[in-house]
Structures are given as C-alpha cells and as structure tokens.
Length: 206
Image 1 (cartoon, rainbow, N blue to C red):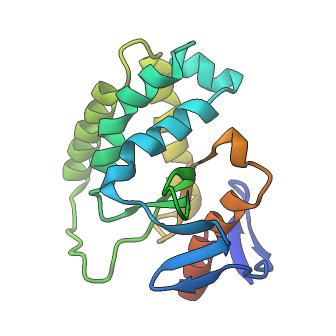
Image 2: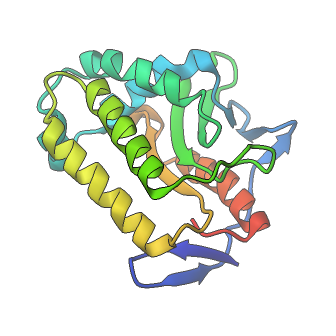
Image 3: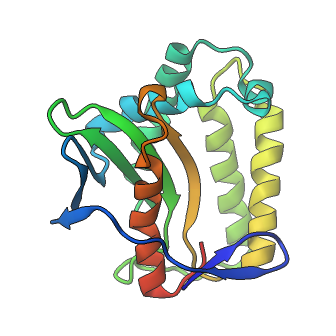
C-alpha cells in the first residue's frame, strides 16, 4: 500500500500498480525499444526541451508568456544541469533504446541520503538560506517571464507543503513531461512507478 498526500488535510493509502517493466542494474526495459534510467548530465538540454514543449497550459503561459519553446529550453538548460548536481533532486528518463533519444522525464525531490550530512540550522540561518535560494531561483528565470507570479506561486506552494508535511521526509514529483509522439504509451506512468517503489520501501509519503 502507498501513502499519498492528496490535499492539505489528509493522507490516503493507495494500492501499488503491478510493475510491468524488467529491470537490471537500475535500467528498466519497458518495451523492446524503450528503457528507463536515471538521467545523465548530458540529458539536461533534452529534458529542458521536453518541459518547454509540454508547458502549454494557460497558467504556464501566464508565468512564461508566449515564449518560443526552443528559447525557453535554452534558458532552462543551465538550471536543470545545476539541479542534477543536487543530492536530493532526481531526474528519471525514458529513452529510445537504439537512438537514446529522451522521450519522457520525471523530476523528483527525494529524501536526503542517510550518508548525507544534515546540519542543524537556527531560525535565522534558515531564513537567510531561504532568501539566498529564492534570489538565486529568481535570477535563473528567463528574462521575459513573469518572475513575480512565479515566485509568489513557488513560495506559496512551498509554504503549503511545509504546513502539511511538518518536516517529515517525503518524495515530491515536481515535473513530468512526455514528447507528443510518445504519449499514451504508459512511459510517464512507468517513470513515476519506478520512484514510487522506493517510497513504498521507505514507507514515506509522496
């Protein structure tokens, strides 16, 4: 059974779906031509391109305007490359077996590894660090984006999450995208399930 945060009020236990992919050495084959694995550093632009092509909702347009997907991907690539170096950020990708083209991606915030040193912060230190991180995130946003709305949404969502979880370790799915030519094939579902199994093993909420 899986514990999933579905609102600010409750946790719900859901049954895990049946795993249909075959895994070996952290690489899973979902079909004769598609595999899933952790993203490589060289995948950062491909991931940015998938996000840029997938972010077409009115809310995303309110944040980023009608930016050209290629220009948005170029602007996002350095940020994604930097996130890949962070120990609690995980990108999982599905790629074509023969061409290695990245066709689907999920981005997660995961619990700190047991070997990772955790430093206790005073309230003042925590606030100072948060101000620094928010400023760095603000400066990393594309120049033509609505930075004020993006920051208000990001900070508000972070506050809501902290209020619900109360500091508890958890897994957080931050982004998911699939190339239009590869949708409705279950690729994103397999990517999500791969990480949900880790949450199940650690009995942590998602």
